Image (cartoon, rainbow, N blue to C red; front, side, top):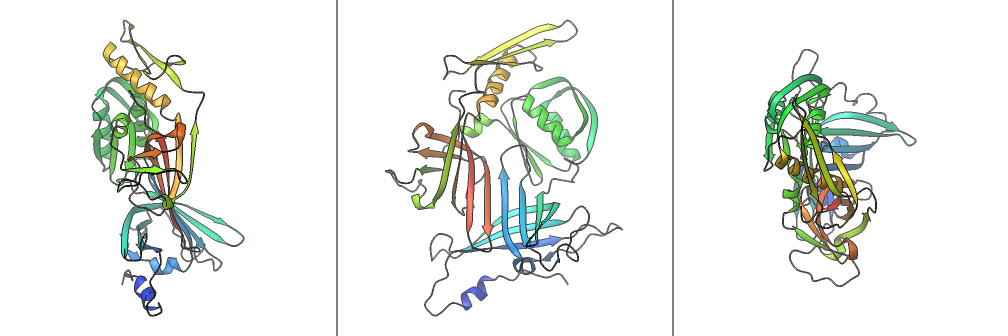
Length: 385
């Protein structure tokens, strides 16, 4: 019979002295489904939370905005060699479904809260020593599993980016969420010995779009649309005056911060040039950053149908080239309300003030110290285009 989840908070509370309150604590709920047997039989799902907790050193999970699938890492003590021998997850298709539980995360009367991290397929196991530790790494489950693992060859003629993306999603058992105002047409494009994921990333990048991969879904979106969102919260630099309200992060929550601004490798203008058809008709278009008066010129040669489309592509390519001009990162006490794709407002950081898009969110949990932290990678939103 499959083992069921037993909530450890009950024993924690029962062990408290009379009148004492349980402080901030976090733990994991893990359900494990082994890979199918050699004869194709599906295996039973069991709760392994209690078994893992006895050896758990740390856990982290990453929510990526673009290109990479979400991932997780479990680090375990393994002096008894359980994970190297009897508990080693053999073959492909071993799944872990993980939920983070917290108790009194912020205040002593908050109680228990849960955050379902997702379902992950184990794709890498690493051992180190001494002492003997095992890292189990997994990536979020993507449809029928062939999206990133199987290389394919296909020629696409007279097809839109949306249609190509939808065809790929359908054959991989995924749904497509299209969040772009435009849908460029492609005369001819080759998928040559590439996985569906690599090919989809390529055509999105070539057409100034972004791609996010989540469980059972592919999201193709326009960066400018996401960056135009209202900030969900304001983050003030600790140690300076702050106008605190319900939309401001408490200063004590900020554990660390850092910013970086590029002085090279950014562009003032983008020029697009394409020779169309057998007659080699030249189509050109350009776009200039309204916030700059001079600088480097980015030259692009990509498929376009007309001058208007060339100008739109130039705008998107310039944005793509400049979007990492100002980046940052900050850490806070564990907060599962943050997600990649949200806009945050950074205040009292001088030159680095402004609205920022969260590009990566990492939740980290240490079983040895009991700390649960969240770090957020951000990039400054581009204004004017």
